[in-house]
Length: 460
Image (cartoon, rainbow, N blue to C red; front, side, top):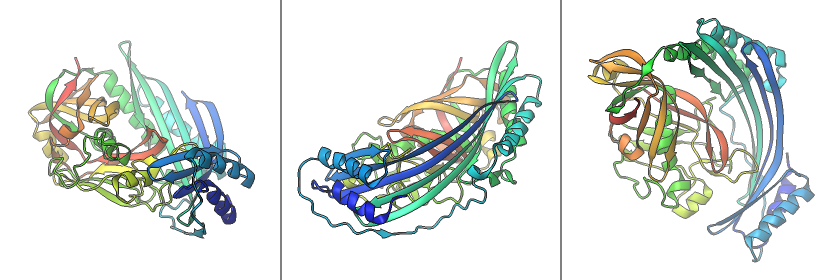
């Protein structure tokens, strides 16, 4: 993308006013999306994103500038803006770059950019037909096939010069059911750090369409959930969004380094029930949130955040590490060259336990089974959260009973993880996009089924 000798000259210009660290992040990304609405192709979008961001540090100060002009002259102008904004000082470094190859543990066989759109449309038609034919109550469907081919280059004043290519593919399916004049929505959205080969046995478009329609049909016939404080079983897969939002963001250096996290200063302390081991692992082969290197060029790693209830680690980027006097954990991520990196999650999950799904449900005399979780909101400083339950069922006398809608889970992260007292063995991951100050990035959330012994359930 940018020659090594050009990067050396640009970095030296960026550091010319006394920076003690300088960095170039360049990208060339091709996004493709095809959307189908109730059997008809509605939109085909092709987007190219190309540019570079230049960042400089001086102690705990950081300045970033970006440009779409990646010629040497354009990069030099961008570097000058960053250097001038950092302030006055003397150049103190000579930069010599060496290329590093970190390898790729996420092989791709069929790059989506090489596949004709009619082949992609056939995948959508299969999913859409399965959803619409599931039940007469399915009135509307929407499905999209999204692919991203993201190539990056990172060069730093520490001598690093490296590149990576990240390809991701995702099928997004939504179905709307109508019963008695009321509508409910169901969804299924599998995605991987893979190409179109993910449809060769790993993702079945028919099964995706059926799952979205099933959720919608079940919830369209459901009554409203009663409100109260009760035990809740949270289903595996995307149920892990609870930990991601209510606790994960509070374990990122972007909160911890500034002392605005509920878990700041608690390394080595017991913060969760001993049943809870939580991990952020960017190295899982072909997983949606996986990386080879983070967006500062640090290799991905498996970070054990909580082990048997004890806080073991935070997720740290370079600037967060400076503030905390700790090394980077390979957790620096950004949506594009136009954003400065911050500490972010990759594939974050609660590790499997020794309980079973059946024993968790059997343990509940009366409560809620939150089979599928939806979105919500959280305050990272306090951990207070509010999440919607997309598919829920009442539990009576250890049995899953009728479906209920309109449920939400309300609580505080630091309290909720103390009350996770059962964890099953069946781990599953769910795909999502996480938004923060460095933009929107792909992440996996996950967990086995868990039981929270007591939590406030919002309803009617």
